Structure formats: structure tokens, C-alpha cells
Image (cartoon, helix red, strand yellow):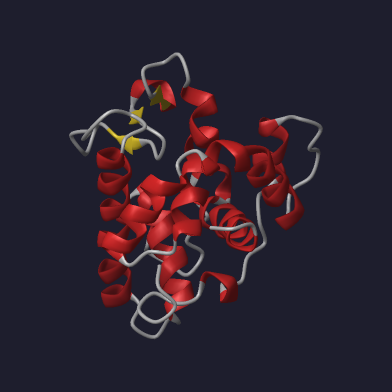
Length: 189
């Protein structure tokens, strides 16, 4: 998200992936942290590069940092690798597309790897920002961004205290996505 309106992704404090997320990922990861998130993002970098034009278009439309969109797609579907051969379905058939739009709450738009899908998912994320800002006006923009990421993962019910990741997937969703976004930002997104 832009440096002005939503904060600077490079200034967001993060602890990275939890050990639970890192171990579930496999590929030799045994512990969590920023290094684990960076390893997972690095493994997805080539796939994310293939979506760079789509991501750039959507990022401009919603004034979102492209690195953040890439990071969500990396976390949600490994840039499509985790859902190839499933017609874009993940999360026990509830998630759809690169960014795993939850079909229980949203009617999926576009093909699973299309600009329409990335646009829909990014709008869902962006729409959580004012919800967080209203609920926690004293939080920094960077903390509000982490809250929006957590809400994207688990709904706005996670926004009942400052530890927004406590009930997200892996108990680390926003922390992991932020660390991946910082990696993608340093690597051309």
C-alpha cells in the first residue's frame, strides 16, 4: 500500500513466520522468523515474477504496494504452486485463486490467476483498512496495515485486541506476509 496512505511496508515491524508455518512448508525449514519468510518468498519469486504485470496494474488501481500483493499470493497459494491442478481451489475448497478469496463470504471473480481475481482480492484487503483505522485510530498506519492483513485472513473478528495474529492461520499471518512483502520489495516488486 502506498507509503503515505497506508504506511511504508519496509517500516512495519515483523517477527516473520511462526515455526508452525515454517515446518508445515517443509523444504528443510525447521524454525520460524523473518529468515523463514524470506526463504518461502524466495522460493516463490519466479512464479510471482510471471504475475508482475497483473500485480502492478492492480497495485496502481488500489494504491497498494505491489510487494504486498505478491506477499499475500505467496502466503496463500505459493504463487499458484499449491493450487495447480485444483482449478484454483485451496483451503478445503473454500479458498479460490492466487490470493485465496474465501468462497463462503465472496463470489469469486475471474479465473483463479487473472487480473480480475487479484483485483477482487486486493479490494477485499484494502476494504479492511478503514475498518481497522476506525477501531484503532491510535495505531500507527503500519500497525493498522497488519490488522487489515489479519482481517483478510480471518475476518474482522480478529480485531478485538492488539495481538491481531493470535487467531490467524499459523498465528503469524500478518507477520509472515509483511516479512515476505519486505523481501519482494527488496527484489523488484
